[in-house]
Amino acid sequence: MADHAAPDSTTSLSAAAAATTADSSSAPPIVITPVPKRAWGDEEDDDVVESGDSSSAPSEYLESLKIQDDTNLEEPIDSNITAVTTGDTPYSSASTFEDLNLSKELLKGLYVEMKFHKPSKIQAISLPMILTPPYKDLIAQAHNGSGKTTCFVLGMLSRVDVNLKAPQAFCICPTRELAMQNIEVLKKMGKYTGITSECAVPADSANYIPMSKRPPITAQVVIGTPGTIKKWMSSRKLGVSCVKILVFDEADHMLGEDGFQDDSLRIMRDIERSSPHCQVLLFSATFDENVKNFVSRVVKDYNQLFVKKEELSLESVKQYKLICPDELTKIRVIKDRIFELADKLGQTIIFVRTRNSAGMLHKALVDLGYEVTTIQGALTTEIRDKIIKEFKDGLTKVLISTDLLARGFDQQQVNLVINYDLPLKYEPSPQATKYRSSSLSEPNYEVYLHRIGRAGRFGRKGKFLCLLYLGTCFSRLL
Image 1 (cartoon, helix red, strand yellow):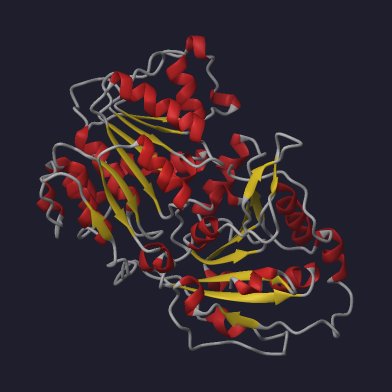
Image 2: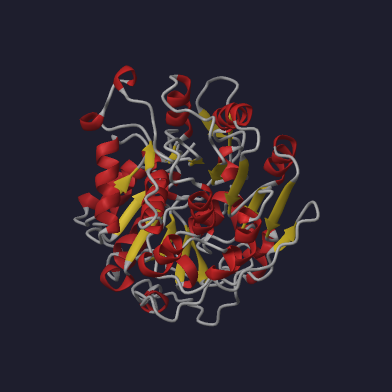
């Protein structure tokens, strides 16, 4: 699930906001501590900020954040990608896009529209595996912001027969926002190819067409969410007999028990029955052991790329933790520090755990006179689209989000991410169909890494600040 509606067990944020208007002279000091390297594989940090002066503590390290120019960026350090191949097909790493035997139209899209110069490490290793016959399935794991989207988008575009007016490539995504982002990348990269595409996401009210009146899909690439794609397939509006390549973006969530496993398996099996030679690509920054074991049962004879778990954190994103004695301190950090420096920071995403928490934090900050927008799964599609567009256009600086945007969301000007609530693992409750936290001592490591990945896109420098309650067991993990 992208986000959860479970009630919070925290102090009322509205009450905390009101308390900030009182005299804060006796407020506890703010102490920001860098997360040690041993915990998340981050680089050691020399510019440690520890101060008892609550008026200046975060400023010094936040001041170092500037919007980076697109020139001279270094990609994430992911040279420790391990490749495991099956069969006897030789694969050579691609040092240039020309090495991949791409069409001139695709090369033009890469150089002119995408403004790429050469493949990133994950692209150099994975693209020969994707594009070389006999087109083996691939499970690929690499750092956030390392160029995974280009790998599977280029793979889909390369396999399409432009003269065949039928769906030939599918990409399944966990959220509407990610599906729409991916199709924009595909349109940009494939601008000169003439390849057609369709975004299969729930329609907003203005564009809703009853399924009975919808014409059959003839677009050559379909990118969308599993529910909508399954609905189109079931209604026979979306044929799968010509599908050559099937991609699962954020595959660990798509195939995980707490994600979209049932819908994803149904789509995969229906396509494999109609197109038995379809290539399956699974991409994500994280794959836990349960998902790996499950994937090994449903995907056979595949190549694999992976990064050691302890090396998954981005070197370009420095992580800090702040121990907060209460909810008021969390509000005070955001109020006094984040908004104070918002114009210098570029853009900021504040992650919360539940929809309720998102709503209460939004109200608390707005009541204090601050401008902030909030996105979560209960909003209408029209409102969600508007919020994303305004944020991507730079009209809003600070965005509160549930984990709806934790995976795959790409906004290069985001260079500060705040963990307002630590992400937790959820399990089905035997008393209800809703999800609840299995234990307050079970942080979700994978979601934590995905949240970090919203900053530091493709080597840009960023900061990640985790707000923790004093006395919780989370301090042993951070």
